[in-house]
Image (tube, rainbow, N blue to C red; front, top):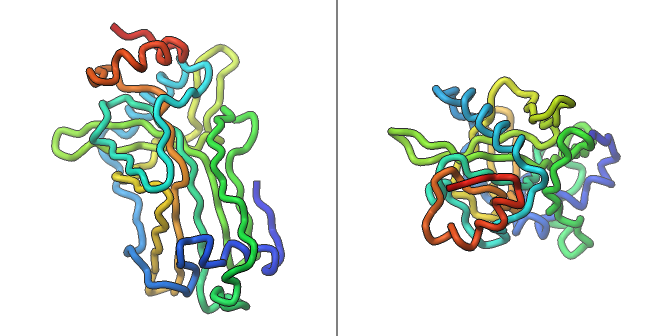
Length: 238
């Protein structure tokens, strides 16, 4: 869902208090502008693997819950582990602002989105709010841990709003392949990006991440405590 609003309505999202002291044109950028990693062999297979795991999942029950200050690392999990997360992004140019974000400090803040309930295409989990110069975006994403022979484990992701249950059974992700999300992820940490050529800045944060299914080869220390939850999700493991 996209809402076109007035600049005044979007102003609360410019408040540096909302982004740990950062905003568009406020605070030093912490990261170079992000680029999507190149397509790699196996990215189509990871889509099939995620569709297969989700097809056997009647509902998403958190086995582990990551919140502010905790760090999720794909290397700590076996391939095939499934997660669901909620991110939010603010994008714009300081030159296009009609207010100094610092003047907004101390004012009421928006409620941070933490909902990761999957919709399987029935309802949108994505929201975009824009006034034409500043855009706020939030979405929930499925992710699956993927292994590589030469690189650390990584996380391949797809919007929950593009994930559909098929009438004949199973799950379909309406993407040709999944995106790659780097880990480790520090939950609740604001990343501040800047693109020098276009003078565009971006703030990004992941608010919550739930592990909802473990990989096929279980870590021994988690096997007993998660066994009941796995059967509840429709998974069978030996």
